[in-house]
Amino acid sequence: MQNRTLNAARRAIPWCFLAIILVAGCAAGDPQFTSKTPAGFWVGVWHGIISCVTLILGIWNHGVKVYEVDNTGGWYDFGFLIGVTMLWGHRSVTRSRKRKLSDAEWQEISRKVEAKFKRKIQQWAEAEPDEDWNVVEQKAEEKLKRKIREWADQP
Figure 1 (cartoon, rainbow, N blue to C red):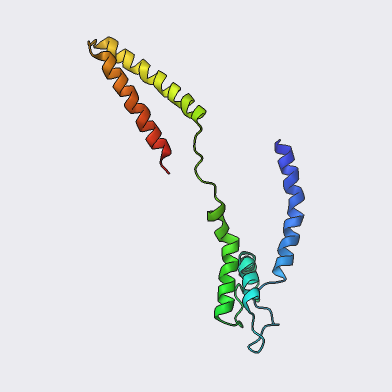
Figure 2 (figure 1 turned 180 degrees about the vertical axis):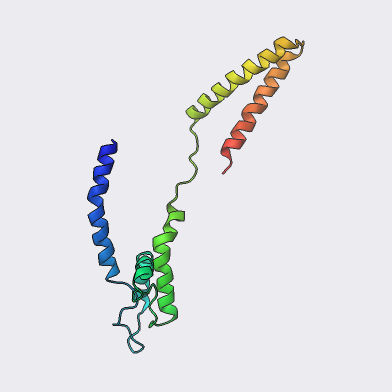
């Protein structure tokens, strides 16, 4: 299993480099944009999407900028923001929510907790016998089950 993962990683490395080179070719700071022909909304979206790559490349190459200076203003900014959100913001939307336990899983958990609880209470009851023990045991079990379910159902 580990060998397959290593082979898959080795095959993916050249593709990652190719993707980085292709994306870097579209980095902000392109001389095609001037004050007469500024970058617009769609270019802003693209620059937002590739902002992570251009940030990394900009560390070593001072000619690569994350943000196009010659732009249309608000529309470019709005497109850039959408692009960045497309890159980073989707994680909060697609993140899976806490999985609810099925009734079968609850029964299994309940059975295990109940068995352990009964063993502990039995030890305590044998150490200090009491005539109302059955009522106390039943109420304690019910409350424990209710509290465990409330705890598990919290978000």
